[in-house]
Length: 165
Ligand code: OFO
Image (cartoon, rainbow, N blue to C red):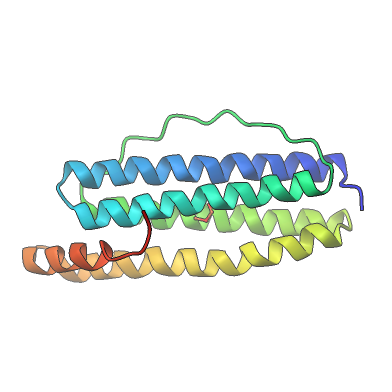
C-alpha cells in the first residue's frame, strides 16, 4: 500500500531520531572513556551501534514501500553528565522519550489506517520495553553501588562483557 505523505514524514523523522540516538550514546560512551570506565564505555558504544540498526530499519521500510527518504539535521549531543549514574540516567530518560515517539507513531498509523506501518512498529514497541528495562536496571545497580568503588568496578567489568564490536 502506498504510504501517505504524513506517514513518510513521520518515519523519516523517526529515522533521524534513531540516528541521533546513536550520536547521543556515543557521547555518553566518550564520557565513560574519559572517566576510565571502559566497560560502561563499551556497553554504550554497542548500544549506539544498535541505534544505527534501528535507523536502518526505518530506512528499509521507507525504501521497500517506494516512499521518499529524507534526512534530518542531527544536533550536537548535549554535554554528558560527569558521573556514571548521571550518564545512565540520561540514557534511561532518552529511552523513555523514544518510547513516547514510537507510541505516537503507532497512533498516527492507526489514524491514517496504515496496517503495514503498524505491523512494522510492533517490533519497536517491544524493543522499547527492552531498551527501557536495560537502562533502568543499570541505573538501579549504580544507585546501589553509590560510593562503593569495588561495586562500581565490578559493574563496569560486567557491562564490558556486552557482545558487540
Ligand atoms: Fe534506544 O531504541 Fe532506538 O532509539
